Length: 256
Image (cartoon, rainbow, N blue to C red):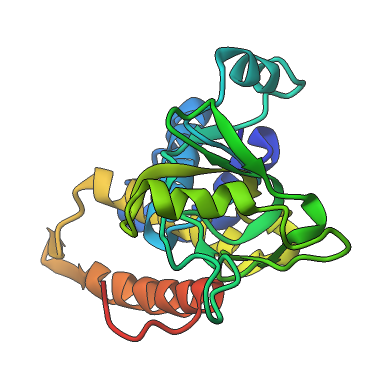
């Protein structure tokens, strides 16, 4: 599972990206196609960690998901990528004042929300399934709110019971959410991320070459020297990375 087509990405890396750095950094030797593809895949995973976002749609399963649920995703063609996350805690203030069941998801942006369930005391013992019409979310920031529409608000009475059970305290691992998160169609919708990931692969290849910062060659009284400032390349790369990360998640109030 990748945002790249292997043949197309490897060809682009060889003919467009490495043509400029091959003589200086790689001593004119082109790595094998398998090695280039591994570098692209590694750069893709590194980019996900740096941006803190999936570069492709991913199914997020609650901890109550069964092996059958996972097998169903693995059995699609191509296999559907999934991750499993622990349940969220229930706060007794969940429906009070202006909260409206506000819940921030661990992964964002949200593509869709399939299920929102209150379960207690075990993860598979459901107290209340939130109607789909109640579920409203802000895709970019991963915020879900529960707004009753069409169904009487008395419906979540069982969810209110949780406050009594918990004695007004937070009850851990009670809210199960199944949703999809990540970016869609990166090549067309986010070409800057696509481009930066390929640049990441090139920088990794340069690192593998262990290129000295400066060197000189002398032949028959003639000398030639050149210097390599890869730090400048990295500085520009990280500036672009920060701008993209802010565009995906919004400007951060503090650095983390």
